[in-house]
Image (cartoon, rainbow, N blue to C red; front, side, top):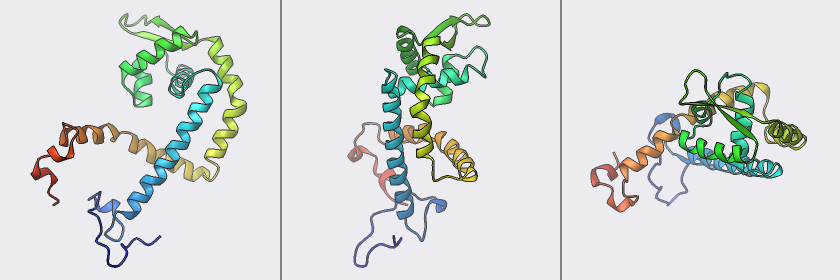
Length: 195
């Protein structure tokens, strides 16, 4: 695709200003990247929902359960805060979802012996059974999702995505700060005026 606007068409204002995100003075490549990321994100979300559904969980509960199962193997006394940080979610949200997993008999909570205000999370044998049975579908699905990547590309992608996951909250907070009412027509003029 050409990165230049069609002749006779006035281009829309740029949606980014950082030179690293502009190609040939346009944001077309940036917009293409976002749209590809959104398409891939939608596919990952659908896969997550379906895998969760296969073991009787929502996609979010499935992600939290697998995170607890894998993290508890390497983090002694795994708690809500570590799971929340790992998944880039709030501790309050993780607590609500963990309580549902406890009620379903898939996670246990015990008092942390080093800090009685905190809990230690572990998966139950039933959760381990479900997660083990799920790999017959999970492995081919994940292999298919990432089939085009070489080992080197996968390593690079991991680094890039890890960098991008961090500032996401800041971007959302910035939108709230710039448009606190949620209405664009109420954003102060000095903020809306392009530089």
